[in-house]
Image 1 (spheres, rainbow, N blue to C red):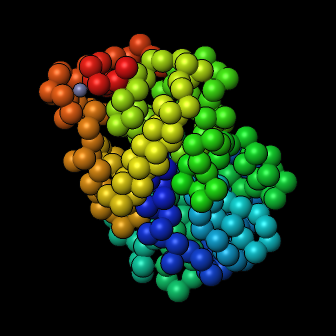
Image 2 (cartoon, rainbow, N blue to C red):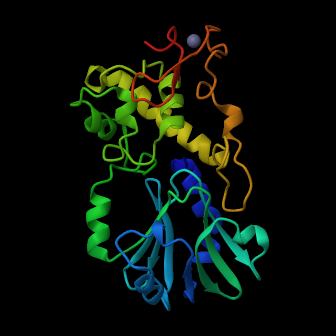
Length: 275
Ligand SMILES: [Zn+2]
């Protein structure tokens, strides 16, 4: 599932084609991806909207219009976005769930093999309500370890599960949570309220580091994820623990162990380095 670095990469890749466009005809190929809006209404409401911003909030892709309304796309498991120039080819049409014309022969495409992704249109009020339920952005300039610790220090939830809770912190999922905890030397199963201030400082630093490194590697492609240019990311070659259960720890050589006991997701850790 695309996390912050993957969604950020897609948004950056497509932004130049999206911003400034006035939307033409939209086509909903799979109406079951729509949330809180009918197909007819979405098609009607999008026509003529001018896109003034294309950005990311947590793992959501946000196309903001001059009207203040926003088109929100969640990619979930297998969703991908692309802007096609000229006529759509057979590959463009495969698994297409939604498309909208951007003008100048360009078409914005949302493809999704498993169709678990979603599309919704929000007015400013709905957006504000939606956005207020999401935690702070870890890469924002004003974010720091004090803000970070405050989000977690009163919960007994396992720190790994807490890191992935979007209402506490935006954008971190299973891959980057595993990596950040390894780099900080913290046992993923520890209750969040048991971490010291120093441990929160370390975890804040490593969380931001893995997310930034993930972006500079254009994301992690294990299977489905593709950038906005249709290419694979490369952070999978830099993973220290995720997907490496049974292999030696890069710090101490002990065998990395994978468990599903913390949050039923795969957690891989070095039980010698992570205490
Ligand atoms: Zn180790």
